[in-house]
Image 1 (tube, rainbow, N blue to C red):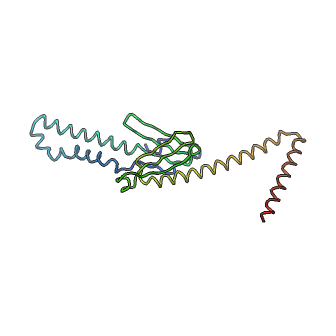
Image 2 (cartoon, rainbow, N blue to C red):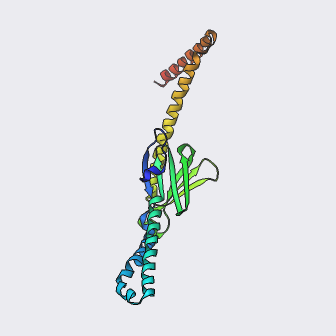
Length: 212
């Protein structure tokens, strides 16, 4: 199953970017995996010579290393942020059995900013992206992302495109609705509308002539 299949796209929506947690933040987990999974093989013969308790140490260490490997891989692969043409979807796993999905449409976003803190964050350029929503006191923090400023800019770019498209569609729908409504009016009402439209056209024409 691909990671893109984790979200259901709306009609006309497409995924622009998938941003995972920065792999380096799992350094100590990978290190411990190597220690638990690889080290016992260096002492394989010695441990097996010690009888049942040596074998128990060997298999326990390998099993713990394998479980930690699976957990680390799952945390790395499944914690992901989707930037689409319509919204932000952040999928966060705190454990195997605890998942949080945050869906933020672009028209609910107030501000977006990226932040890099700490020595290691500044050195390796990873940090967090905070999304303030239009609901007071509600913010979404996407932590431990590589190059948060790039993600911030991508979100802002897609938000501008979405808002511009939404405004254009609204204008087209409004015009279409007005035209359809005209067919329901009587002749007298249409004459009043005709006069108002003519005045508006004359006013706009005069304004354009004054500017030139």
